[in-house]
Image (cartoon, rainbow, N blue to C red):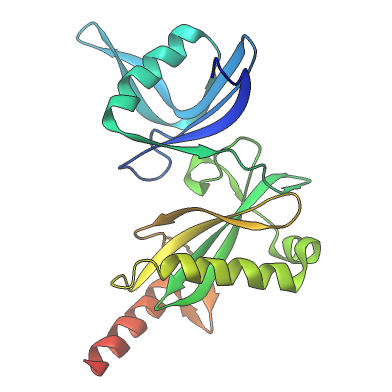
Length: 208
């Protein structure tokens, strides 16, 4: 940070789920901020971090050092912060459920802060609006990228791939989730996510 003088990065724990411990860090000169779904609490007179559904922004060096001092020793991944496509209600990305190598159920996640996880109070974006903005070719490219990412784990029947769409409509893989199948009220070819997973599992067993 001192050498670069400015930057935007995501820090993600090596092991975690549902954005727990994920930190969005940005700085310019002496100004810095970190946004994360956690709060600073105390236990036995010592400061500790608590997972929270409320996304907070910390701006003091003391808070940043406290947070990173507890998270970094556990192992974290540093990712370049890719600006996301922004629609009228906020920035968007995609959760794409890939089942047996095929992109199936998907949802647009939209947020006014860096974390788009729906359980953090964010909203499902308008699918029709999103399609109209990026067009069928770019959407197809996002699906193919999700399938390629899932292909890195051939022993996994399914996974949830988070695909980021930048302002130039280019897709990037944000992360691959071991499950990522909690997609209520979504159907694909008449199947819910769980029904599609069950059918794929049954079909795979029949081939053995």
